[in-house]
Image 1 (cartoon, rainbow, N blue to C red):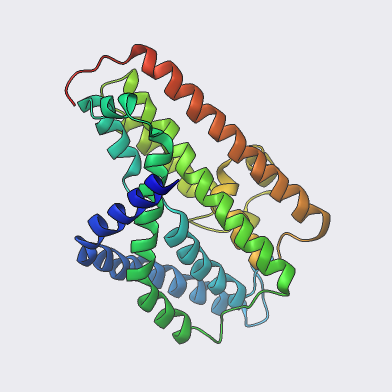
Image 2: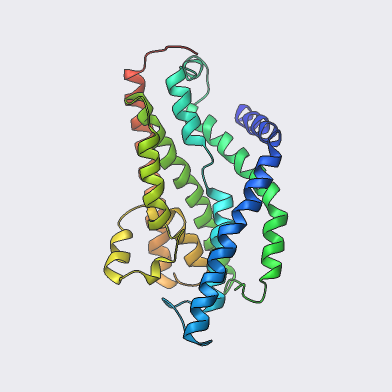
Length: 268
């Protein structure tokens, strides 16, 4: 276990070398957030102050996108899939076949260090935005909701990482994985609730999406926080999210095991 803590420490140090990039990415990330919040305020203004859209009030909609920004900062994969694919193609994984270190957990430690560094850089800007919009920000209903939210965020991070890891292992079979990654991200951006709340979709489409892992990669923790997922449904959704994490973990292990059989140790 000590060796993995050491990897996290090295990852944090490496990421701090590029701390300005993290800060710049955070600041420029608020540009689309500001634009979409202004868009929704215009929509609500046209419908009247008491109107709702998809069951969301203006305050809830504003909170939704603020929470999406926070959850994204905590869980989003930042070039990890590209780095994993590069390690495979360049033969850098050869060293892990000879050392007592699991490559999946090695990459997960680097993922954690990247999220920790990014959150450190983004903490002050995000806090300032929340304070500026505090009149619209909705707090969780109770302690149970907050605990469920934290648990869901953890599983969201695991699912994000494992899906990206599995996608990156395609590098064992194809020379260029960028097309597959872009297709996945494009669909995930919409189906995970990043672009808009899934509640505003037609019921049939929304229900169909819950048979995929995408809503559990972002919308789930946000929906819990805002009280959109409660009671028995909350337990069911959390159990389903945990199930998807286990499925993603199994796929990651299987893809790696089969990929290693095709791997030729070139480079490294």
